[in-house]
Image (tube, rainbow, N blue to C red):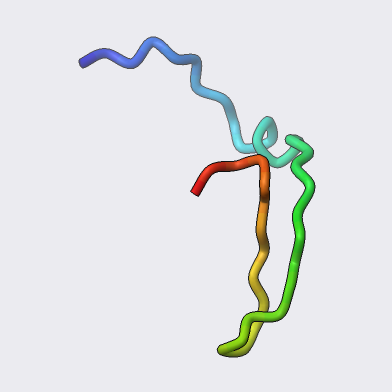
Length: 39
């Protein structure tokens, strides 16, 4: 299968602006959540 999507460099992805929510994890540490992204 051929992938015709254009490859983008890392700078493109680092410049995307998604709101990130960071909250404490009950098991310790923190969890970052990006509501606009599935998963």
